[in-house]
Image (cartoon, rainbow, N blue to C red; front, side, top):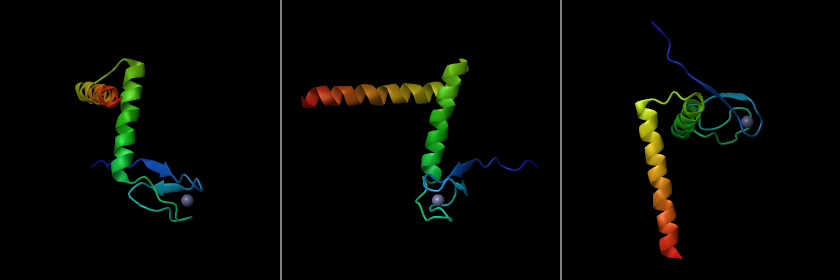
Length: 82
Ligand SMILES: [Zn+2]
């Protein structure tokens, strides 16, 4: 049975390697991004990697479409305010 892949993160303060399930650095107490943000960052990184390599999955295309829609909504929101 395969072990689940657990990517590691590094503390932004002391650069010690962390288990990303932790909320605080066990070396210096710096607050860590947490699993939800790390997952979001991984998704964005996967999108960037896929866009570079030209291998974009359906899910990633959907994510990119969502990001574009959010960006468009932001621009329209800013235009409406000014
Ligand atoms: Zn630290």
